[in-house]
Image (cartoon, rainbow, N blue to C red):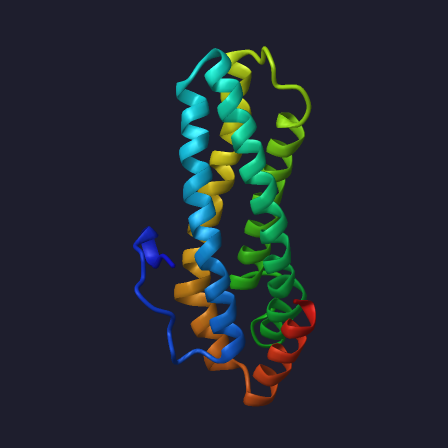
Amino acid sequence: MYGCGGQRAESIDASLCAPLQRLMREHIPLWDDLEEFLLTAERVEAEAGVNQEEALTRLYEQVSSFAARLKVHARKEDDVLFPMMARYIGRETGPISVMEYEHSQAEYYLDKFLEEASGDRRGINANAAKVVAGYAIEAYSILTTHFSKEENVLFPMAESMLSDEEKARLDSMMLQME
């Protein structure tokens, strides 16, 4: 897991309740996937011809797999955690509106990449491939900042504002989503 500014944290904050710790643990493989697909996207930008096509195909596979896992994780936040927190801090402005906006922006860039990179990539124009890879890089940029905000600000905020009863309900609802 990474902390603020992309620094890898050594452990999950034990002061967080079980469901928030679970959300943080889910970030660990997502961080790893982000780093992996960033390297591949950078390869797409650096290569040309067959090597670029192969890198773009690999990137498509990585992003497709990542996006599916991210959707499951984001649903827990969008459908359970954020509404619980919004009861205290609102949803129209502030942290929840920022988190939801970042979710939608990341989803937009991931979907845009998957749409543009789907199909036959043979003979793709080098510049077009770079533009397509740029969508994955933009999603990476949004999500690395987003995860850091959740881990360093939002999850600790939720820990302090939610009652024990709400944390138990959060846990139960999240477990039902798995």
